[in-house]
Every structure is written in C-alpha cells, then in structure tokens.
Length: 194
Ligand code: SF4
Image (cartoon, rainbow, N blue to C red):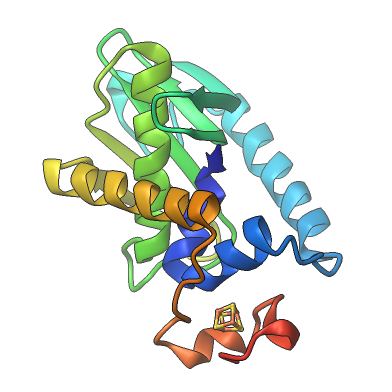
C-alpha cells in the first residue's frame, strides 16, 4: 500500500519513491518535522476556535470539522492522514495545510494531486463524491481551491498506478528533469542524478 505523501514525492521526483520503498535508504533526521508539527497544531487550534471555516463561507457555519482524519482504501492501495475535513449535510471538503508559499496564488502541481488523492480516499471511505478541496498555504495565507474534474481524477489514478508499479515491480524510474530540485533532496548523496 502506498501513501498520499508518495504521490506528492513522485511528482517532485519519481526516484524518491524508489529510494524510499525499494532500496529503503534511511532518511536523515528531519528537524523541519518538529517545526511542522508545531505549526500544524497551531493552525488546527485556530481552526477549531473559528466559527466558520478557514475560508469564509456562511454555508459552513454549521459544518462539522474533522482533523487528522486517517483514511485507507484497499481499492486504491492507498492510505494517508488528511489534515482537515469539512463535512456538511451536502458535501465533504478536504483541506491540506502547507507551511510555505503558494505558487503565485495557486496550488503547486504536486500538492494539487496530493489533495486529489485525499479526495479519492474520502470518497471511498465515506461513500460520497468530492467536488472541491483547498490547500492552505500558511506563509502567504492563500487558500488554493481545487475543483476535482474528471481530468484531475484520471491523472491522479494514473499517478497512483505508476507509483504502485515502482513499489511492486521495483522498476527504477528516471530522475526529475528539474535538477534544481536535487539541492534540498534528502537522497542527494546516494543519487547519481544529483
Ligand atoms: S537527488 Fe535529485 S534526482 Fe535524486 S532523488 Fe533527489 S530529486 Fe531525485
């Protein structure tokens, strides 16, 4: 079973999935994780106190707010823990927190498909259809809306299959075509592509 984070990593660089799931290369301790957890808890606390939701919508005043929602689907071979899920009597709205800047006011590509993977899990776990979701970028306080179109669904399912193939078939994928991404990569010292 792969994780939603694998979907994000695959879009950053497919080789990361190979290092992680096939070669099981140990990761260096990530000090950003502790900071990220603190920021996450801070955002969650504020959102619990807020009358509406993270973005203003009067329809959401009575919505149920669920945090750190563990989701799993044997159908998709996928699991993940969603930061925040809004539940109304009409729909479910998944939200992912990011502690950086948006991409000029919109979502970064890998974040978009990560959220779409969460949307598929929400659909499978709650027997619903998810029509939209948001990525909250804390640095510039942007809520990037993602409409889950048929095209995004198709592309997300394809990515999930491709990640699954790397893990199951142990086929070494190509490196990212963007070498600038190698600079901060935790697998840089093992990788010939760096
Ligand atoms: S160092 Fe570069 S090519 Fe290698 S895994 Fe990291 S991002 Fe990919």
